[in-house]
Length: 166
Image (cartoon, rainbow, N blue to C red; front, side, top):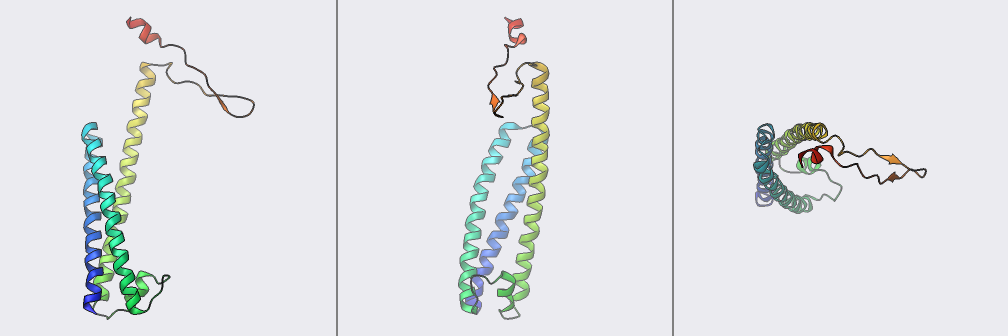
């Protein structure tokens, strides 16, 4: 049975590693946002995108290993991971449960960091829009709606700031 469970354990460990790498990138991203390092932030976002591909590959590997083991223990497509684990020899159950629990905890932490970083970026964007509005007060067009409910295209008047510099 060990030779059939080991691929799943390896796949779960790989998935755990990849989520750990993503968490490290999220922490780095927050520092870059706070320190307003836009160029480094762009590089970090590219790394995050690459890491998401690695996570998808690790999930696929885990799912392949899970399906193979599921077929061995007589489960079907509707069998949950927990139900499958319960069908395995007792000596393997704690390891698999611990790996799944750790992955789920990492996922929660990644989601928390994602929400925090999104909030920080949103606040930065709001601040930049406020600064631009103060510098160029006429650059934001007021939305006008027609009788049919569609937004009418209204061009903003030319900026007086630009005219004053000439």
